[in-house]
Length: 306
Image 1 (tube, rainbow, N blue to C red):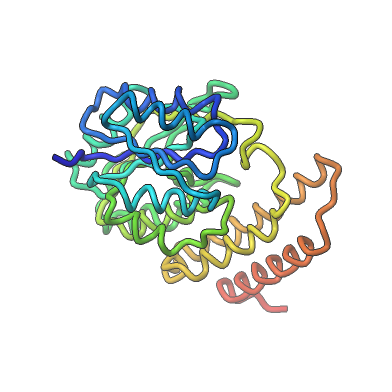
Image 2 (image 1 turned 60 degrees about the horizontal axis):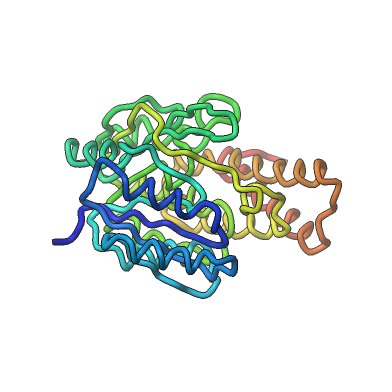
């Protein structure tokens, strides 16, 4: 009998963390699950550790691939998953023992397609909610009225209505699998927000839970913990991904995109300032194209005249 839930863990050179992550999944109070670990071309012994975890528990399957990136790793893990529901987890993080029970039960009890919860920042122990949108069960009509207009850029300055990571959500495989196949595999950052927001806008219903169950750990060697050399080229890919996705066809969502992209431009500028390093000429050309595209988007959305 196939498990109801498939937990997909992506791994690239996370040998110090992968055992802790895997055990936090396998020791869940919810047992009707499988753990699919996708090793994305690790060179630090993570591949061997993944195989050892697989040998110790029949619920574990390991997929080894060349280093193709997190998008392809998540896609391959999802395609091979046996469960009706999917939870994507980063290999250096870990879960509270009742996380999968809480989210899966919420989906089964409400009939929603996506369940979202908060997380715990391991740097300071702070508990963050799923976003600024109140907890509850949202039908399709309620999503369109009360979630779509605020989920990317909420009422508060610099806040998100829904936190933009896949790892705080469990959703139907039939929903997330085709979305992953439409994402640029070259994206190194921001791909999870592109996937999550598309899933929410395509869902028949969403349930947002109180509580924080996911432990987000900042690994000093991870891509989110250091300046990204290709920050603006990645941002250009991400922006093109948003504007070519179904999100761009929902006016209440599209109106939030300039704020999101401006934030990423300024964040890249801040990374350069803090590090004392300059971006390459090629990256600065990408930055100029992104800025021009944001300005054009604003003119189109808000009828700004020169």
